[in-house]
Amino acid sequence: MSTDFQHARVSLGARLRELRTETGLTGREFAVQLGWPASKVSKLENGKQTPSIADLVTWAKTAGQPDAVAELKGRLHGLESRYRTWKRLLAGGHRARQEAGIAHTRETTVTRGYESGIIPGVFQTAEYARSVLTHFTDLHGTPRDIEEGVRARIRRQEALYEPGKRFQFILAEAALYVRICPPEVLITQLDRLTGLLGMDTVTLGIVPLGAPVTVVPKHGFWIFDDRLVIVETWNTEMWLDDDADVALYSAIWNRLNKTAVYGPSAHRLVVRARGALAST
View 1 (cartoon, rainbow, N blue to C red):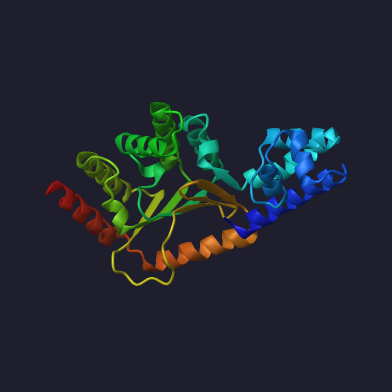
View 2: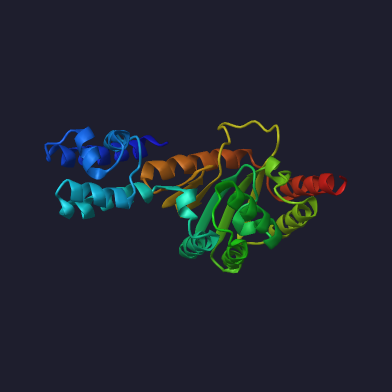
């Protein structure tokens, strides 16, 4: 977990400890008042566990300071606005998250991104997107509103045809081969990519397998107008808007961009991947 995130959670824990200390109760005594295990109080106070809103409300009331709830909620929101677990983010299903993506795209002129193992959502066919969202739902055990999520993801692609918009993406060549879907679906998806290569709103580069790189290509990320970076990990989606974070990811994108191939060279890599699939 990020150092910034941990510092913020430790700060929140220190504030909870302060409220508890003002009651004159020990951590164990306070836990009895709360009806919680003493270990939970210890973890919250030491920044080892992220509290829920209900936890904060109960804590403040038990400490005799209900007016502190607003402050505590604000501190928690500061954590969640940067680091959101997929379990919580998708608690209401995929549609809401996909519609948030539509809003981001609508507000952005230049979207840059890098993906190491998947075709970017804004380029996905409906069938490919359906496979991606199904796998994600199965992994996290979230509501199965797959079709609603797919429809919202496809609506996001309307921005590809808006004058003035720019989508600059880099793929690792391996992403062309990852079989998160049936082979025939992946073939259609690769055909979709070749069609996008000629669009004036889209720039698509591919980092060839074996190409020398100056930065280790890890997780995927999207950069929105140099004001926000969204990073997806297995369990968390991170929203980074600090200047230093945006500058770092921009530098990483620029390094990957120097290694990527474009135009006819990129087209040949996509066609080669398609041929490998068709021959299996």
